[in-house]
Amino acid sequence: MSSGGAIPMSSVPLTPPARRPINLNSGYPELPPRQSGINPVGEHYGVPPMKAKKAETKRKRHEKEDAVARRAGGWWRGRGCVPDSGCYGRSGPEGRKRRRWYLGLIIALLSMIVVVVTLATTLHRKANTIIEPSQWLNLTGFPPIFLGLSTVAAPVNIRTNTGCVFPATKWSCDLPKELQSSVAPSLSNQPNFFLHIQWDNSSSANSTFSNVTGNTALITRHSVVNPVSSGQFIKRVLLNARQIVTFVPSPSPPSIAESNFLGNATDGVVSDNKAGEPTPFYISFLSNETSTINKRQLKLLERQSPQNSTDPFPNITSIIPPPSLESDGTASPANLLPFPSQQPIRLYDRGLPTEHYGFYTYFDRSIFLKSIERLNSSDLDDGEVPADRNGGAEKSEAAFRCTWTQTRFLVQMWTRMNTTTQLLNSTQHVASENPAADLKQPGSFPYPTTITTDRHGGDSSLKMVYCYEMNSREGLIAGSGKLNAENRAFGGLSFNPAPSFFSNSSDPSLGGFDGGTGGCSCQWSNFQSVTRA
Image (cartoon, rainbow, N blue to C red; front, side, top):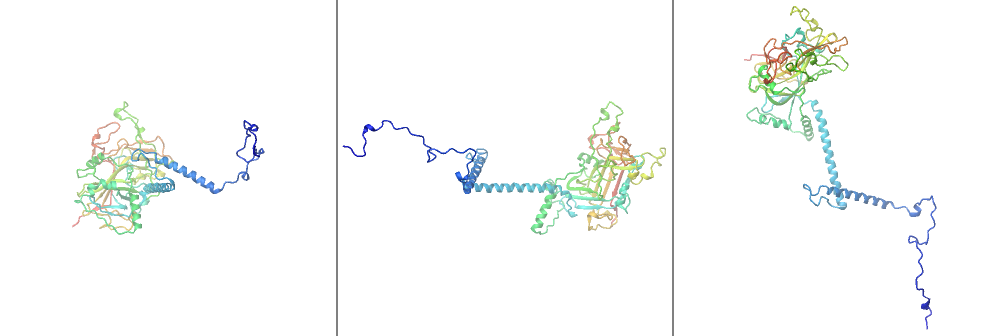
């Protein structure tokens, strides 16, 4: 007996039927073929939501940020002060937030450093143009000094020695003809001097002179400090920062060895320290002319010395410097005085009646002339061309331009002569309302001052007198340069004269050349001796 739904076992197949392939990606057994040339669009797949897209972009950015942070945290691990485990910091949003704060602070700090360095560099370059008020400075260990801009107006020409050359008009103590109107109604041999004295108040300078300024046995340093507002304080700090500069003398100051030599042989320094003591003060001489005088930079010329040369008559014309020309091809202007900048001031004869601040440097002085020969070669008294007197000829009328290389410019400011001298045209010094532009004799500089140009010292290999011929267009004729003879012992004594091309009796171990009291020179002073009861 069998149930109604059963089937006999004999009718059951021994193997199952083969399975047909099924498309698991679709509910349909087969998809219709896609038409060629038709791209799927949003209606087929649907447009992804923007929120999900932004979230994915943010996630990827965070992953990259975390990867960079992890790479940076493990970059120096196990070295120095970085632990072996590295400096990964916290992970997740909190770690990213902290890293961003740290990065922002670092960028702000670096930006501040860049701004400070840029401003400091820019202000440093403009420091020399700062016009600080002219005033006295009482610094411990040094005589008082008048800082800022001041003038020495119409000093008297107390010495003129022109006998070292023939004709004597080659050397003059008068301003060039083109500049004489600038000192009117004063005489042409009374030039005005514009001084700018600066004080190096940097920490390095204070450390250098601490043995002087910190000596309580010396003069007491006076300082007056007034209460200021925060704005004034910041302004003062910035001004001081601008003035803390590296002073660069131009031209370079002479060597200590030469200063010792000239202090002993020429300048009459009384103390044992003939070269003087260094000070934290610097001085510049300025020009009030609108057109500045171009200063030629001398170069050492390679040449054989007479003692090493087999030729007893070397070609001395090869050492003459090339013509000094303006940009338009005309000859450079004539000059009587230089304009040195930031020269270090030294203190001589401390505590003695001859105590003074001073410095010296070298320059090329030049003059225009109509003639460099005597009118009457047989009569030494009849040798000057009238147009060449009192400062030389005018440039438009000149036939020669003569140059005196390595001419010395000496300045001495006497600090203990208040009882034996008085300034010109005054019984006592009265402070000027405008020290920088006071051109009324004696000017605004309060110390008795002596200014000298002479032919002592200098580089013997560059020191000479040479003249170039001029053409009708006020230019210099190349190849026409000639050396001129110079008697550096005229009117005095010569000590250790510089070697010449045909003789050398000097001793270089003395530190300098051409000492003594002779040679061409000019000297000006702004004071006169007095006898006080």
